[in-house]
Length: 358
Image 1 (cartoon, rainbow, N blue to C red):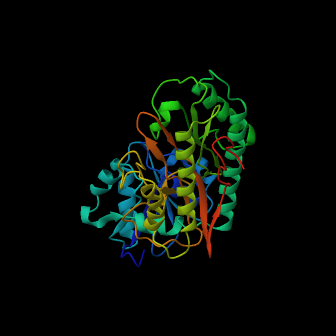
Image 2: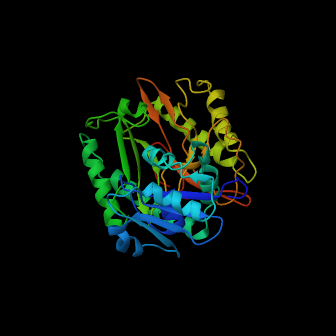
Image 3: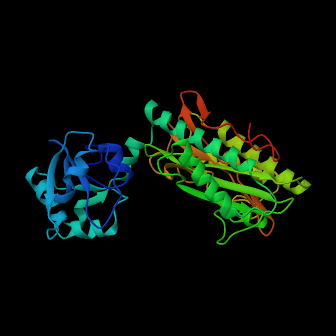
């Protein structure tokens, strides 16, 4: 905060409040937040009637600024800042716009700045305990994907697989079943996040399953693409190219390397094979990867223009998807964390189009 030149930091309900205070609280229209100033204990700003519930999960020592239903909680924030001589407030970028509007009624607009650099600077590099929780979530999801592959049959509906995957995550002890689940067959795999409606699987089609769960709030996010039946030459070639691009991105990871270099490494493989430059199709339509932790998508992002150097403890997905419009898409997604001398997978990459699990 001193480096950024701010006197106070406001963390709202969501991943950051859980990270800094242990409170797994979902954001609603009622402000639940933690105010951290350069001096003094943190202050929890919350509805008075929620005090007991919040005390049950609060993991740090904190004062309180309670507010009743008819009162303005943003005034409580401004009052606490004034008491501590704080003038500049760094606001959690995950806060709802209504929070920003509410604060502007009591603080000069120029006094409210983005807390992204502060929050990301703390959350990006995971501790051994955080890495262990992510490993547990990844192990669960990989097991679920193996089970799901085992029940696939001709004519199965994508909806049946989604339900099965959710129940399997719950059976293994994930926080709340699947945090998300995308199941695609055949031509629908060419749409990175799918299309609405139920698809029925046919012989010779690709199956793409992208899903994850959370363990104590820490997330997994794994994608497998494989063939149902016997692959044709084009399916086999594109799948192998996807695997090569994923491996090239992984090999480039080491401390000090800019995030954008990982994206560039994957794209060089695809461009050398004749696929589109930049985001042109057929080719890779999006970034190569995203950070993961208490949020499924968080910093750092492996994308062109991001010169942030990789550091030990950073975690990211590696998913340089290939899309052939009107035909199919292939996405292989595994996560890694940066070590002192390179990268380490959370899950072993898929070895073959007809053998999705190592």
